Image (cartoon, rainbow over all chains, first blue to last red; front, side):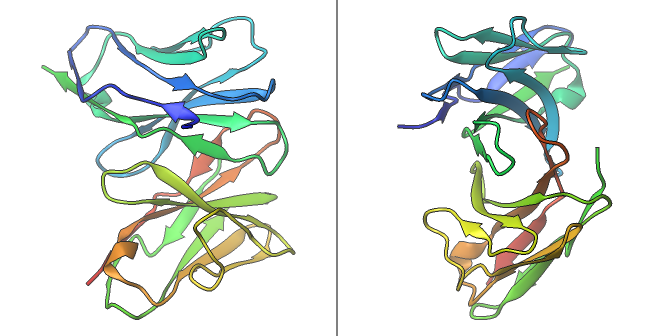
Length: 116
Length: 115
């Protein structure tokens, strides 16, 4: 089974509006972390936001927030006040366990296009 | 964060040749991770490189095809050996600066095209 599932097709949002990018995950490890990365057309991977499995509150980082629903195993990224520069691929990733060599497993990604 | 420099940034190589990708970090890190991103796809972990020991490869990746060196805490190389067009991908090195819940930070990647 896939550990990280991102099933939305390409997403479109009007500039200045909010958009939600979906991510569901699958793990039996009680200690895990969820990450969102942005990859613009230039190819760099930009870390956006992190949510730990034991965190009581949803993570926020500027215009980015994470809607973490642990029982449903979902960690959706919310981008508020979209900007043209938000157009990019967005990847959800999970880290199982907290060991130094624990790796990140990435979802397939979602393409976001912001319309002026 | 850290400055992670990858070289080359891109290359076009002939089938059957090998390419070595370098990754330099401006701070000492314990673990380095090498990922591959095939065109239009997600990132797939190739191997984890720990200084002073053999790299740990993921299923589907073998040392003969992707030998890795990790001579010190700031540097690593990944070689793509005996290349075929299927090896055309972006190769990214990444590091975790701290333990626990810290994210991976990525280099800008090496865009490899094999003809």
